[in-house]
Length: 240
Image (tube, rainbow, N blue to C red; front, side):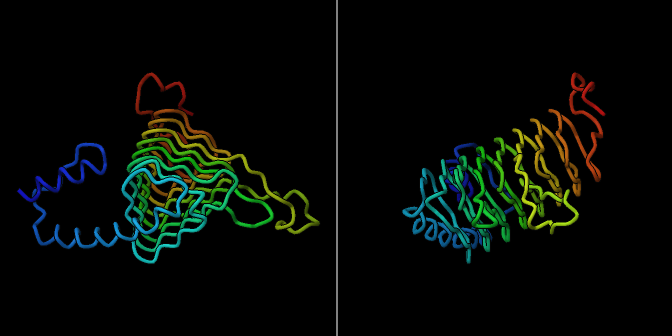
């Protein structure tokens, strides 16, 4: 009875069918509900300061959310404990419905005040696990239904170093940006570098360093990442 009610509540918030595991006891659910109430209250207090917030917002303990007016939540979102989001940028952040980001994660749109970051666009049903580091210097776009394992990092800027007589920190940087397609799984501790376009339905293996484009339906791994195999036979000609 209680689990049935809980399923309805979560399904309504997420706007999709959701069922909790039958083995979860009432005491566990009750403890989680108490935590969620606290997160809901923090989210409610934050909503007036955001650019837009069209859904239910859950915010964990000791989160550091900066430049809130630059953040637009287009649906429900869950921000776990100790998350830092700094949205200071030219285009701000737009985040789709049913977004979640795990504890100790960082999304940082600007590194230095002399050159603001560009913009960040995240589709619906995107889940980012704990300890992620996402630097939005160039444009970052993440497609819907994409999930990230723990410790993933994304870098949308690359430092210039051609001049051997000048410190690298003074040589400027290039910002090609990063695009990640729909329905991708980015494995734990994967690193995605500036200028990369990852196609749709891609799997990036844990620990991979992605420094070049990845075609649709590819499974890539290694340092640097290479195509291991394709998920669909008609895409086999894309394999390197």
